[in-house]
Length: 482
Image (cartoon, rainbow, N blue to C red; front, top):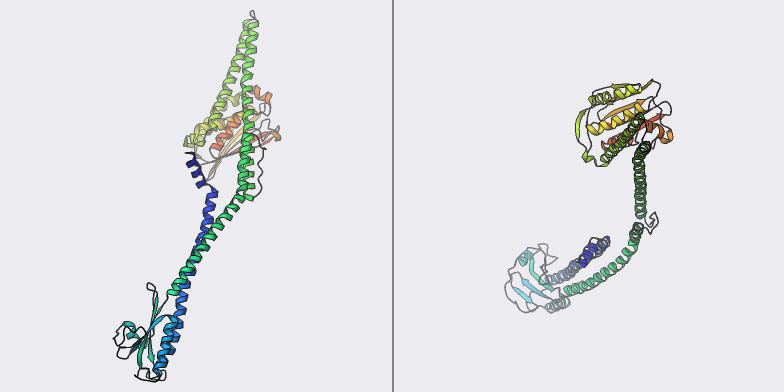
């Protein structure tokens, strides 16, 4: 089973695919080249042989036409006969002379003497054509040449010379070349694969370093950063990997800090309740009013603990995927009116003027519950962290274009220091811890708000001047982007 697994892993590996690529690059062009060369050799050799025979045959046909070779007992017949025999010997062929009656006048093989030959090629030659055929299956060249006196203006065909020449020597040479080409091809493939594998192993070394480096970091024995800069690609991979490791470290540190903060925040109310309870137990004769005061304090601490737990649960839900959003089409104008109506008593208690300004009707695809929580946090913070002289105000405005809705929450509150603006969305972060504790803040509201807006594929920005006020700008798509 392990062998099969290793085999399949090797088949899927980059090394195997590179080896296959080298094989294809080595074999395919070589094979095409060999086939092309061998085919062109045979065609070229046959063409040259045909040209040679044709030129010699024409000379011989002219000599026959201008002599009295066809006349029995001619003195030139022996000379022509000798030249025909020489032609057959040189080219290992057969020559047949056909007279104008389609009878064989002479056959170098003495097989068809005085026989009548009526073949298509012979008839075409009697019409003045030169016909050449190559029989690839039986390996011979056959041509018919008209015998015409070049000085005869009428171009009368006196006869036909039929020549058959064997191409066995060309076939033998072709076979020999095929063997040589096969041997060369095998040598080229073996050499290419051998040196290709060496090259692949050399160039794959940096990837092995990457794997070893990642394994070392995983086991805790390597450096914090991965450095394999042999190639641009490996350097880029290392850069991206180190960025991921850096983000993981930040996330881990944030998680540890979050756990520490949660422990501290949950422990503080419990500690206060324990101190109050111990104080009551240590004073059995304490007046009833003191008991009531201590019990009210304990109730406040319980409420504070409950609020922290509820905010933590909301934050955990916000951390889940956006698939948990219950997106519906919501009238944002009405939603803001409802939120501000619920918060009006808090504003009246703080003596803060609460104003809503809507520039146009706005309907958007949002999760009404989560968006309500986010907007409530923004407006409630604007009310609670406002001026205490009775002249504070909170201005909420709503606008939209064809793509986004824009929500602005402005206040005349205490403001946020510039150095704290980048940290206000962190969990349990407080700009003024003492003031936050006085008004019951948990440090989770803005973290919840930001997560909710991001889940809606929106954005939130803050601008603040210490002692003058704060403005939160929220942008959310009208149509939800999955």
